[in-house]
Image (cartoon, rainbow, N blue to C red):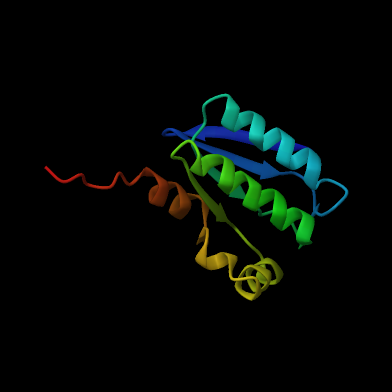
Length: 119
């Protein structure tokens, strides 16, 4: 699975460069993303603008990313889902688990917000 990555304002943006995130590439995707987390990246955006199809293996890889981040106090958002992926996230109710945003800019803004602490 080919990925592109860039860092903006403490947020790592990962974009699969394939049209499918399915059983054929999900394992490699998961391994690469978990490596980024092990390197210390705790705010991730998965930009799915190139992905036209995702199966349960792809969803599992993204859920695994969220689990890995949660052990490190991290955050995850996904963005640029086409209509089919939006329907998939709604149907599986993952749109209630992940921050799902229309654009990279919106997702980045959401992850950059630091919650206020009580004094």
